[in-house]
Length: 458
Ligand SMILES: C[S@@+](CC[C@H](N)C(=O)[O-])C[C@H]1O[C@@H](n2cnc3c(N)ncnc32)[C@H](O)[C@@H]1O
Image (cartoon, rainbow, N blue to C red; front, side, top):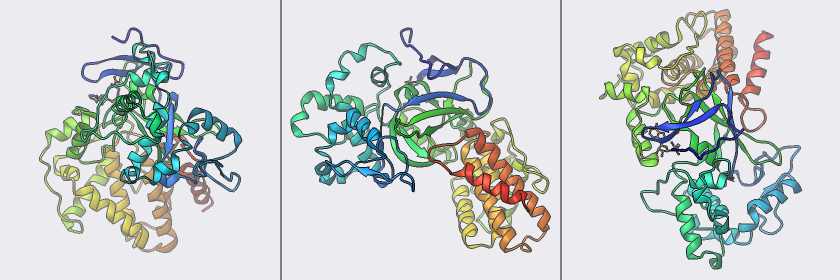
């Protein structure tokens, strides 16, 4: 199998191998250190979420800023660009195909009835099907170097509800051939396309057939993807290793948030990707089902569980936050802490952190934030970006406590609190530097730089 598939310089560290269930898998050709850029894959096509229209360039996705004022397409007045280069490139690649019909299309009841994500897919699909001739003969090639034949080569999974979104094309172009092509291509969207994000906030959808062909899912992934926005260029997906990957090891991405409850993950993977996950986390969680419900939040019993998970995952936090470097901490969890896997545990803890970090008391927010950090360290693999994002939030909460309520923590002195704050920002920095900058300028790494400077001057 796959004898004819060529791999390209975009991912020289990967080889495509056989998977007993998933057809293909991406295997590391060599040892990949933590934080290595494993693949750079330009988008075949991409589209902004409706909420991002007019905020970003429709071609390169650059954000409007003081130095970049976006200009509209003078024909439809509904697409925005940094400059002539972006506008010309988008026009040639895709906008000319939909410009004339765009306004009537987005006002139509069919389009309005779609969810924001389906609206994006309707436009992506329209970009792809206008030239059916471009697809002729690509079915036979199995050539990963050609994004069109790579897209054709992807596994199909038509939607259970049978939906194929309407097309932003004039009726005369919507021939039986075009509609058949739309159905064929859309059957490859749901289980293959990617949600684009900047600083981990979604802003659009992208088609990266080469990445879709390579990377399977794991709830304990050893890699994560991020998006590189470069003026005048299409967005590029970069795949980064979260921790060291051995030669020959499968490289996996998370298709969903591993912190979701076990049953929710299984149902979503079954419905959207048609497989049952057998990763280490799912195997472990399947073995401890049904998980006992935790005590109610606020009770002494749950406070004990929270304190035990903090000590298990983070060690003695009065000294320094310990960073685990290997995945699978959940497998060593004492049985009395299994209630943390119950579907009610994380939502109530997150709510407590969110409420108290906004309204105070900040001492309560710090405690909830540390428990949440411990939970993430147990569930997520090392250097998972959400761990870093949360450590950064926790740093800000600690800083608020230092500034607003220095005497509020019963035990720690101000010096100890300062040490906690520094170790939280160091933890955030170490995780997020491994992931590297993503999307727009600024963001968490810049916040970390400012906070580190501020703390070192104290
Ligand atoms: C984006 S593709 C991944 C590449 C795919 N293996 C291929 O050969 O084209 C997603 C599809 O791969 C399969 N898949 C991905 N991860 C899997 C896993 N952990 N176990 C079983 N099948 C998986 C499912 O069929 C899913 O719909």
